[in-house]
Length: 224
Image (tube, rainbow, N blue to C red):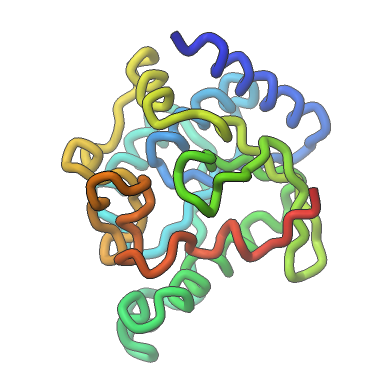
């Protein structure tokens, strides 16, 4: 059933790796990221996996991450903010309630910028279907970052549907995080993640509907 989507994704990955000496993959350990990681690691077993350890994740997601890291022998780098959660809340209060954009900037965007600085290729698990802000996603893009750097950004599952993602995981006997069975469709930091409204896109439950992106994929300018 998934022969063509998998073949296309594999071709995208292979093409990207041809010109890369030090690729990385940002992984949230959501379903599409895990499917993507499984495909990438078959061609590049030692791919550097970047995880944004915000300090606000669901405990079950951290346990799931640790399980896959152990079972798949992943080369993982946990990216953390300069301040601990306790220090940030002592200085600013609960930013995820008062200023979620700033909270995302401190705990996600800034650590990511440091984490990808040494890499020449960035694989993502983005999909067009996820939200209106991702509807025009291309498999190969070049992005310009605020510090003047450019970086190749590759999304092998750009045109996959959620059904195709879960079918791939099922066919390959890859477990998924239990939060999906509870009704969540897009999983981020626990205080900012709710179940989506019926009929809405998968990311509608993020940040109480106040925004759709944390900034990781909007901090840069797409050049092509």
